[in-house]
Amino acid sequence: EDKVVQSPLSLVVHEGDTVTLNCSYEVTNFRSLLWYKQEKKAPTFLFMLTSSGIEKKSGRLSSILDKKELFSILNITATQTGDSAIYLCAVEMTGNQFYFGTGTSLTVIP
Amino acid sequence: DTGVSQDPRHKITKRGQNVTFRCDPISEHNRLYWYRQTLGQGPEFLTYFQNEAQLEKSRLLSDRFSAERPKGSFSTLEIQRTEQGDSAMYLCASSRTGLEQYFGPGTRLTVT
Image (cartoon, rainbow over all chains, first blue to last red; front, side):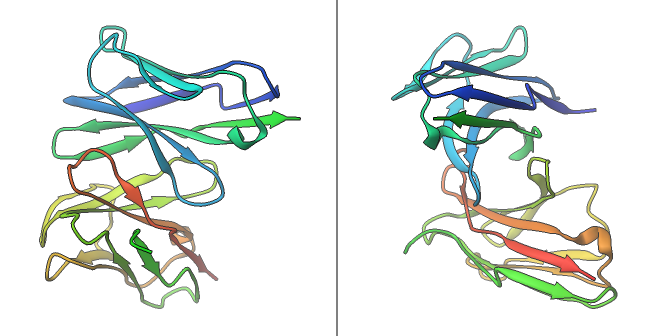
Protein backbone atom coordinates (compact mmCIF):
# COMPACT_ATOMS: atom_id res chain seq x y z
CA GLU A 1 0.00 0.00 0.00
CA ASP A 2 1.29 3.44 -0.90
CA LYS A 3 1.97 5.71 2.01
CA VAL A 4 3.45 9.09 2.80
CA VAL A 5 4.27 9.73 6.45
CA GLN A 6 5.13 13.12 7.85
CA SER A 7 6.70 13.84 11.20
CA PRO A 8 6.28 15.39 13.59
CA LEU A 9 2.52 15.79 13.40
CA SER A 10 2.78 19.13 15.14
CA LEU A 11 5.50 21.43 16.32
CA VAL A 12 5.60 24.60 18.42
CA VAL A 13 8.70 26.78 18.26
CA HIS A 14 9.75 30.32 19.11
CA GLU A 15 10.51 32.97 16.53
CA GLY A 16 14.06 32.66 15.31
CA ASP A 17 14.28 28.90 15.83
CA THR A 18 15.21 26.53 13.02
CA VAL A 19 12.88 23.62 12.27
CA THR A 20 13.22 20.45 10.25
CA LEU A 21 10.13 18.69 8.93
CA ASN A 22 10.32 15.12 7.71
CA CYS A 23 8.53 13.21 4.97
CA SER A 24 9.08 9.52 4.31
CA TYR A 25 7.37 7.59 1.58
CA GLU A 26 6.72 4.13 0.24
CA VAL A 27 5.04 4.31 -3.12
CA THR A 28 5.12 2.43 -6.37
CA ASN A 29 6.44 4.25 -9.41
CA PHE A 30 7.79 7.37 -7.71
CA ARG A 31 8.24 10.37 -9.97
CA SER A 32 8.68 13.41 -7.73
CA LEU A 33 8.07 14.81 -4.26
CA LEU A 34 6.46 18.15 -3.59
CA TRP A 35 6.12 20.36 -0.54
CA TYR A 36 3.15 22.66 0.03
CA LYS A 37 2.24 25.21 2.69
CA GLN A 38 -1.38 25.35 3.79
CA GLU A 39 -2.63 28.18 5.91
CA LYS A 40 -6.37 28.65 6.31
CA LYS A 41 -6.94 28.28 2.61
CA ALA A 42 -5.79 25.88 -0.08
CA PRO A 43 -2.21 24.59 -0.31
CA THR A 44 0.40 26.74 -2.00
CA PHE A 45 3.38 25.21 -3.76
CA LEU A 46 6.84 25.42 -2.20
CA PHE A 47 9.21 22.94 -3.84
CA MET A 48 9.37 20.06 -6.26
CA LEU A 49 12.17 17.52 -5.90
CA THR A 50 13.06 14.83 -8.38
CA SER A 51 16.76 14.15 -7.85
CA SER A 52 18.56 12.95 -4.75
CA GLY A 53 20.97 15.21 -2.94
CA ILE A 54 20.17 18.44 -4.75
CA GLU A 55 19.00 21.10 -2.34
CA LYS A 56 16.22 23.42 -3.39
CA LYS A 57 16.26 26.78 -1.64
CA SER A 58 13.86 29.69 -1.42
CA GLY A 59 14.71 32.35 1.11
CA ARG A 60 14.68 30.79 4.56
CA LEU A 61 13.21 27.52 3.28
CA SER A 62 15.18 24.67 1.82
CA SER A 63 14.48 21.06 0.98
CA ILE A 64 16.33 17.96 -0.08
CA LEU A 65 15.38 14.49 -1.25
CA ASP A 66 17.02 11.13 -0.54
CA LYS A 67 15.67 8.58 -3.03
CA LYS A 68 17.73 5.77 -1.56
CA GLU A 69 16.35 6.14 1.95
CA LEU A 70 12.98 7.36 0.64
CA PHE A 71 12.62 10.58 2.54
CA SER A 72 12.74 14.33 2.21
CA ILE A 73 13.26 17.13 4.71
CA LEU A 74 12.05 20.70 4.71
CA ASN A 75 14.12 23.16 6.71
CA ILE A 76 12.97 26.57 7.83
CA THR A 77 15.59 28.83 9.40
CA ALA A 78 14.97 31.94 11.51
CA THR A 79 11.27 31.12 11.78
CA GLN A 80 8.69 33.90 11.81
CA THR A 81 5.08 33.91 12.97
CA GLY A 82 4.04 33.99 9.31
CA ASP A 83 5.54 30.54 8.90
CA SER A 84 2.78 29.12 11.08
CA ALA A 85 0.87 26.73 8.82
CA ILE A 86 0.42 23.11 7.93
CA TYR A 87 3.21 21.82 5.72
CA LEU A 88 2.16 19.08 3.35
CA CYS A 89 4.35 16.61 1.53
CA ALA A 90 3.01 14.98 -1.64
CA VAL A 91 4.45 12.26 -3.81
CA GLU A 92 3.73 12.10 -7.49
CA MET A 93 3.38 8.64 -8.99
CA THR A 94 3.12 7.62 -12.62
CA GLY A 95 -0.24 8.47 -14.07
CA ASN A 96 0.09 11.93 -12.57
CA GLN A 97 -1.51 10.86 -9.28
CA PHE A 98 -0.48 12.72 -6.16
CA TYR A 99 -0.51 11.14 -2.72
CA PHE A 100 -0.42 13.58 0.19
CA GLY A 101 0.76 13.05 3.74
CA THR A 102 -1.31 14.25 6.68
CA GLY A 103 0.89 17.27 7.18
CA THR A 104 2.94 18.82 9.96
CA SER A 105 1.28 21.65 11.84
CA LEU A 106 3.85 24.32 12.69
CA THR A 107 3.12 27.06 15.20
CA VAL A 108 5.66 29.84 15.66
CA ILE A 109 5.30 31.79 18.90
CA PRO A 110 6.48 35.42 19.01
CA ASP B 1 -7.83 37.35 -10.62
CA THR B 2 -6.46 34.60 -12.86
CA GLY B 3 -6.20 31.86 -10.27
CA VAL B 4 -8.27 28.71 -9.89
CA SER B 5 -11.83 29.46 -8.85
CA GLN B 6 -14.42 27.18 -7.30
CA ASP B 7 -18.11 27.57 -6.84
CA PRO B 8 -19.86 27.46 -4.46
CA ARG B 9 -17.47 28.13 -1.58
CA HIS B 10 -19.85 26.56 0.91
CA LYS B 11 -22.67 24.08 0.49
CA ILE B 12 -24.99 22.70 3.13
CA THR B 13 -27.22 19.88 2.01
CA LYS B 14 -29.41 17.22 3.50
CA ARG B 15 -28.44 13.59 3.35
CA GLY B 16 -29.68 11.97 0.19
CA GLN B 17 -29.58 15.10 -1.95
CA ASN B 18 -27.34 15.54 -4.99
CA VAL B 19 -24.77 18.32 -5.15
CA THR B 20 -22.61 19.67 -7.96
CA PHE B 21 -19.46 21.74 -7.64
CA ARG B 22 -17.71 23.71 -10.33
CA CYS B 23 -14.02 24.41 -10.87
CA ASP B 24 -12.55 26.92 -13.32
CA PRO B 25 -8.83 26.30 -13.79
CA ILE B 26 -6.16 28.77 -14.82
CA SER B 27 -6.83 29.33 -18.50
CA GLU B 28 -3.70 27.82 -20.05
CA HIS B 29 -3.65 24.79 -17.74
CA ASN B 30 -4.70 21.58 -19.44
CA ARG B 31 -4.52 19.41 -16.32
CA LEU B 32 -7.17 19.50 -13.65
CA TYR B 33 -7.37 17.58 -10.38
CA TRP B 34 -10.04 17.05 -7.75
CA TYR B 35 -9.15 16.31 -4.13
CA ARG B 36 -11.09 15.86 -0.90
CA GLN B 37 -9.68 17.06 2.39
CA THR B 38 -11.03 16.37 5.86
CA LEU B 39 -9.86 17.95 9.09
CA GLY B 40 -6.40 16.86 10.11
CA GLN B 41 -5.72 15.07 6.86
CA GLY B 42 -3.88 15.94 3.69
CA PRO B 43 -5.75 16.24 0.40
CA GLU B 44 -6.96 12.89 -0.92
CA PHE B 45 -6.75 12.43 -4.68
CA LEU B 46 -10.11 11.84 -6.36
CA THR B 47 -9.64 12.23 -10.09
CA TYR B 48 -7.53 13.84 -12.81
CA PHE B 49 -8.24 15.25 -16.26
CA GLN B 50 -5.92 16.08 -19.08
CA ASN B 51 -7.92 18.34 -21.35
CA GLU B 52 -11.38 16.72 -21.51
CA ALA B 53 -10.15 13.18 -20.86
CA GLN B 54 -10.51 11.73 -17.38
CA LEU B 55 -7.27 9.81 -17.09
CA GLU B 56 -7.23 8.68 -13.48
CA LYS B 57 -9.86 8.01 -10.87
CA SER B 58 -9.18 6.93 -7.31
CA ARG B 59 -10.38 3.45 -6.52
CA LEU B 60 -11.65 4.94 -3.27
CA LEU B 61 -14.16 6.98 -5.23
CA SER B 62 -17.60 5.43 -5.01
CA ASP B 63 -20.04 5.28 -7.89
CA ARG B 64 -21.94 8.17 -6.32
CA PHE B 65 -19.14 10.50 -7.44
CA SER B 66 -18.77 11.62 -11.02
CA ALA B 67 -16.70 14.32 -12.65
CA GLU B 68 -16.71 15.88 -16.08
CA ARG B 69 -14.68 18.35 -18.03
CA PRO B 70 -16.69 18.57 -21.22
CA LYS B 71 -14.70 21.08 -23.22
CA GLY B 72 -11.38 20.78 -21.50
CA SER B 73 -11.92 24.00 -19.57
CA PHE B 74 -14.10 24.06 -16.43
CA SER B 75 -14.94 20.88 -14.56
CA THR B 76 -17.84 19.73 -12.43
CA LEU B 77 -17.88 17.22 -9.60
CA GLU B 78 -21.24 15.70 -8.73
CA ILE B 79 -22.05 13.70 -5.63
CA GLN B 80 -25.30 11.78 -5.74
CA ARG B 81 -27.28 10.65 -2.69
CA THR B 82 -24.95 12.49 -0.31
CA GLU B 83 -24.00 10.87 2.99
CA GLN B 84 -22.70 12.49 6.16
CA GLY B 85 -19.30 11.00 5.45
CA ASP B 86 -19.10 13.12 2.32
CA SER B 87 -18.73 16.24 4.46
CA ALA B 88 -15.31 17.65 3.59
CA MET B 89 -13.50 20.37 1.72
CA TYR B 90 -13.39 19.62 -2.00
CA LEU B 91 -10.33 21.11 -3.63
CA CYS B 92 -9.65 21.62 -7.30
CA ALA B 93 -6.16 22.20 -8.68
CA SER B 94 -4.82 22.87 -12.14
CA SER B 95 -1.43 22.55 -13.74
CA ARG B 96 0.25 23.24 -17.03
CA THR B 97 3.16 20.87 -16.58
CA GLY B 98 1.62 18.20 -14.40
CA LEU B 99 4.02 19.04 -11.60
CA GLU B 100 3.35 22.32 -9.82
CA GLN B 101 -0.34 22.45 -9.01
CA TYR B 102 -2.28 25.58 -8.25
CA PHE B 103 -5.14 25.01 -5.86
CA GLY B 104 -8.47 26.78 -5.75
CA PRO B 105 -10.05 27.99 -2.50
CA GLY B 106 -12.17 24.85 -2.17
CA THR B 107 -15.84 24.09 -1.65
CA ARG B 108 -16.75 23.16 1.88
CA LEU B 109 -19.57 20.61 1.90
CA THR B 110 -21.64 19.92 4.99
CA VAL B 111 -24.15 17.09 4.85
CA THR B 112 -26.74 17.22 7.61
